[in-house]
Image (tube, rainbow, N blue to C red):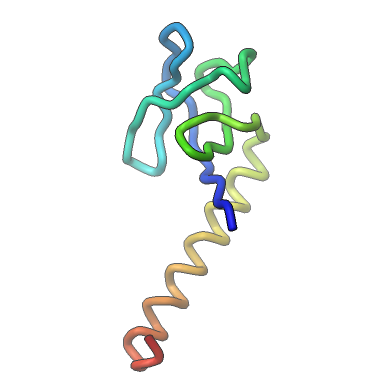
Length: 81
């Protein structure tokens, strides 16, 4: 299974983009998304931007991830994991 992670582009330097993953920043490759620009919301997989998404979809994904993490924590507290 592959996991693409949503991020926001902060800056572009040559073929790299500085992206923000909710407070964690990292440079990723832009080769697969050459039109990306600062302010864009993107999906990153294996250190590369694989698609540009709109803000609404970005917010939906982040909300779903947060719900998933909350459920895992609750299950851990109940001793399921």
